[in-house]
Amino acid sequence: MARESGGLIWMNGKLVPYEDAKIHVLSHVVHYGSSVFEGIRAYATPGGTAVFRLDRHVQRMLDSCKIARIACPYGYEDLMHAIRETVRANGGGACYIRPVVYRGFKTLGVNPTGVPIDVAIACLNWGKYLGKDALDHGISVRVASWHRQAPNTFPAMAKTGANYLNSQLIKLEAVADGYEEGIALDVWGYVAEGSGENIFLVRGETLYTPTIANAILPGVTRDCMFTLARDMGLEVREEQIPREMLYISDEVFFTGTAAEITPITQIDRIPVGTGAVGPVTRKLQNAFFEIVEGRGRDRHGWLFPVEPRGKVQRAAKKAR
Ligand code: PMP
Image (cartoon, rainbow, N blue to C red; front, side, top):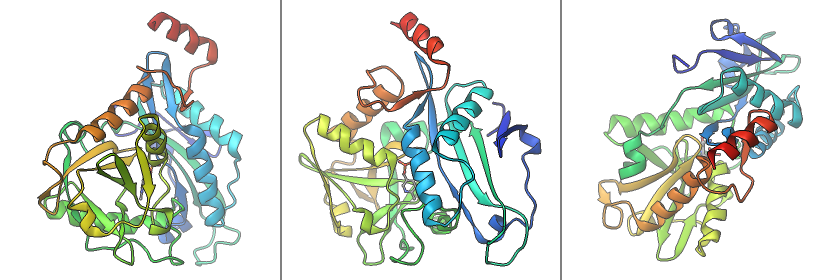
């Protein structure tokens, strides 16, 4: 893929060239953020291209549609198939996949009744979201002045386009102030998440992460941490986390499809622990990459092969 994207984009069941994947400027989504979307990664493994936790992402997209009252014209199996078809049509290999369900073009009133619902799937060439250096050495973040949304305002559990003005404000503020990312607190002042990442704190043998009632997106990578930590005999607690816990934790890290497992080494210019990436973060990061890059056994069934089955098995056999 030559540009950020390129190749073919799946639109309402057809693969169209990148340049032709356009919508009308009066589409409902342009004005009101009426969309739900996903961010999914495909990894190049020795056994072929594999989409990471495709089932969870598709399910979350349909859950988001349900919350947003968007009747997605494609079901679970259709989307599972369409996403893999799009990756395949673009030549496979590592990529960031962006499916989006959006209210299209008919009338511009806020009431979306009768406005068509369209679906697109693109593959982007994103690489490491916060930089390779971020994964190795960690990042410096600030606590955002913007809070996450209050309960019963915008649905935090839905990955809707409209929610992402909040994320943009958090990110823009952090970058303008010389930080890589921001940590948003919820409306009560408890730790919530980054602009596009969940957050974990480590103290001793215990991991802490905010609950789904703290205005977070229930992250797929967050869910992986529960499993990998359990594999390592570490306890994970979903709790309300006061801001000051950030400053006295041994280790803090972000999780997300784009950010993967990114260590945080400084918060508000205060070093986290020793100020270097800690051993628990590194262990979880290594365990994660071992699975997604196909170097370890996919013991939790997280990889969804893109190539037809026979081909994947032959390639895997050759790699062994
Ligand atoms: N929170 C927000 C606001 C996000 O946009 C994301 C990225 N989808 C996450 C958390 C992490 O979720 P996941 O691990 O499913 O990518």
